[in-house]
Length: 474
Image (cartoon, rainbow, N blue to C red; front, side, top):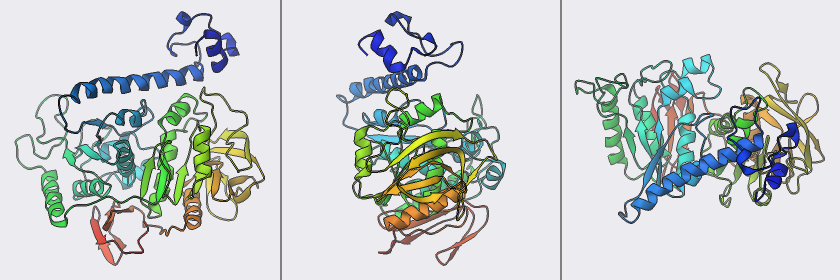
């Protein structure tokens, strides 16, 4: 900022008489009388992320002269607090990304929207989409190279409740990771410790070194991989844009008790998966060439270059809600959002919606939950609410979504967008998910019951794969 005066202007410190006269007056944005200035918090979040990046770089700079082996680090399952640093920035100094996959523990302590019914149905299988989203995210963080560093093989010890996996799930989780491009699936742990803090955390072996249930399933996957041969990932036709900075913005000013950036992204990802689509996760600076459908929900800060690239993409693009809602300093921009090139739409006001205050769509299923925006627009209205206000507007292939849809709303919007993009979709049975590789289409049954698909009955925790046909567009 060069001077305290410039910082005061950028942060809007005139409000509540927060002006600083000297750099030494600026403390951390905590222990304040009331909420701190969101611009102060946002800059602190950036600074904190940069410190993680710099610390990791100290390690990579020390190792590079000593070895030509690839460098790898492991990340975690995301929650509101696990987006504290930009994983893309850390990944720029590494060769391989990896993450710790604990489907049953995560279902219990961090999956957004996992109500009692959802947790009961998937108690022993895990959420059908949470792991897959992380697989795709960390594939992007690792520039195509990624591992599962820790895979859950049995009950863990740290969640509120720690059920055992349904027989077959350890095999399914491993195969799902491989179908999403994992180079390796490693288990935590080899032998269950009989002592200390994690003595109730299962391994592939029991504490007496006898085989635990997960061992036979891990061995089965190893044999199957050897028989099937090299599994090459395939570039998806659909993409979902992910920005850690947006998470910092909405953590700081959620404007609604249940508004989380990761929850919004997860809901969009779920809808694409329910439609049978495979997905690539993209950072905001990624090349967009070759994608036919791009979803960009909640991109709070949108530089002009990003807006231009999305507007000029050959893909069908859906931006919003809350996209372009903040400047780099965390203020409301003028012109008002979303200010997308070629799309005549302006957000008049926004509202967060408590449970039960849904805004239904007109002429079909769906509603806005959690968040709704009032648009002033002369663009084509694709979907309207029952109140007659625009829910989804478009100009050519660029769309703006003016709220957070429920499950039925997301399914409707993804179906419309996929049709516009020329992508074939299918509404999958509840709990069934597909993933396309270079040569095969894999099916994974997360449901607690058998499901029929592609002429076969897939049991609970079942995995099937078929050679890819020329007309497969998942």
